[in-house]
View (tube, rainbow, N blue to C red):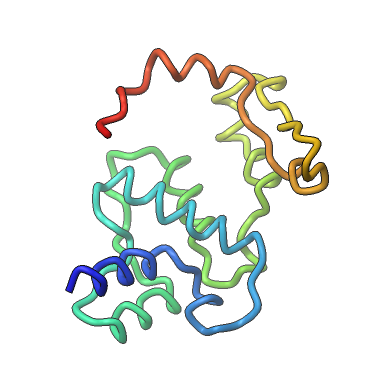
Length: 144
């Protein structure tokens, strides 16, 4: 039973194109990130069903409960755009970082590229906040 639970957990974060066994790209990661944002916000996964077929149908149609109205329109819009069923309608990471709602919450020079000589082309695709070290003092300690 525990194995099935793990499979279902991984499946709820998979994009519709992965569920359909179609080609996928980095936009599938945007979908998964939208699922994580949704769950961080509501403390519930965006897609829930009694069985795998029901879960499949909800994911490929993009049926998930709306965020409660006490959350900002900016947050709601970001999650909604990440959870677009059509991958062509989902933003790239760079496009998402250029959204006014994101920009107004960080300064213009807040991002830096990760540098790693082992795989320079891949690493060029990763950006992190320059002030990431500040989070060390604000995040709770690990429980493991």
